[in-house]
Structures are given as structure tokens and as C-alpha cells.
Image (tube, rainbow, N blue to C red; front, side):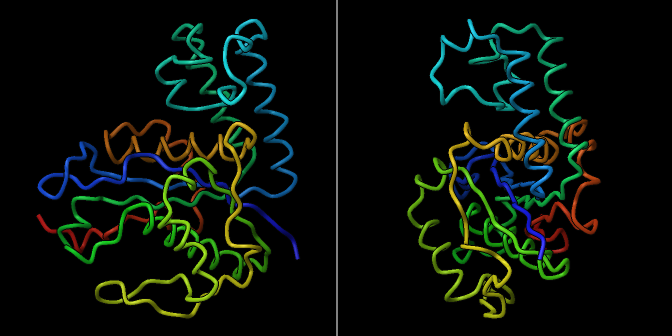
Length: 258
């Protein structure tokens, strides 16, 4: 059986919006790219090339090693290792990254959660956005693996994983209890124990994982589309979505409460 890896990254905070909390952002997005071994190798080669092109060694030495990575928000703002670049250079860098994503021909998975509507629909039963997004995204990836007869792995940013103990416990429980949530108040259906998924989820520092770095560009693009209506980059990558059903919007629009 052939294999592939889903690299995941998130954009937006997990807090509830008023009147349920103090978050100033409505949407939380978890997005990722499925790469084959060949495309994974090319991602490593090309992300290194892009970084070397736009961040010369005399600039790199001014920053810690863990800051030497492609990070879309830093590119947008011209921050950190990209602070020496002019506006046109920052755009050219972003263009190269998105062109690379398209050249790799990955499959895009994304879960976009409207936190306000989620809380309105489910109230005290609403799952935390990051936990629900992780469960939903990996669940759909598992279905994809079975449909394509593939063996898969999932790689997530180790720093984000370490921040949330409850997320860790939930992921560990996938194998035992299943991953699918369905029905009123998310009653679990124990019919997917992730049989085509090796391990459950692997952790990697983003600066050592080009796949996570590219997933960051995708998650930020999807988030900007929903949160701010800035859709240029989203429109570039949206056709990569699996079977035309990505990104998945939670809760479904027909359940929104106005």
C-alpha cells in the first residue's frame, strides 16, 4: 500500500466570542496538506531554497534557529527573519510558496469553525474549537485513506500540542473510543478506530517540518477567507480540497442561529 502524510496547522484562537467569552475572532481553522513521499521530498528541497533565497546568512545569524522557517503571518507583516524585505519582495516570497503548494498537487483538508454559531447551537455541550476541528479533520482524512487504499500518518506542530493537555488526552483516546461524533449533542459513534492511520498523530517542531510550514500558509489563507473576506490566496488553493468537500464548515450553515 502506498503512503502519505497529512501535515496540520491551525489559525485563530480557541476562545469564545461575546457574549460567551472575550475572543475578538469569530473563526478557528485547522488545515493541512496531504503529501506523498515524493512531494514531501520536493517540499523539503524547495522550502530550503526559498528560505536561502530571501534570508541571506548574515540575516539568519541574527535570529535563533527555531525562527528560521516559513511562517505566513511573519511574511504578511514583514516580521522576524523577513523584516529586511520590502513589500514587493514579501509578495514575491509568498507567491513562490503558493506556487510550490500548487506544484506539489497535495490534497487539502480544512475545518473552519464559526465559534459564535457553535456556541449558539450547542450551548454548554459545545466542544472546544481545537478539539472538534482535530477530530473532524482527522476523521475525514481516515475516510480518505480507506477510499484510496492508503496508509497515512498525521504530523502536527509539537509546540501547539504541548500547550493543551486535554487535546493530548483526546487524541490518545481515538484508538480506543473512535473518532466520529454524530447526532444530537455530538453523541459518539464508535465506527472509526483509524485503521489505516499509523500511530495516531506525530509531533514535529514547525521549523524542522516543511510540511507544517506549508500547512501554515494554507490554514492562514482559509482563516483570512472566513474571518476577513480576504480570499485571493484561498481561491488559489481551494481547488485542492478532497472530493470538493473541503473546507468543512462547522456548524453547518443550515444550523446557524441568527
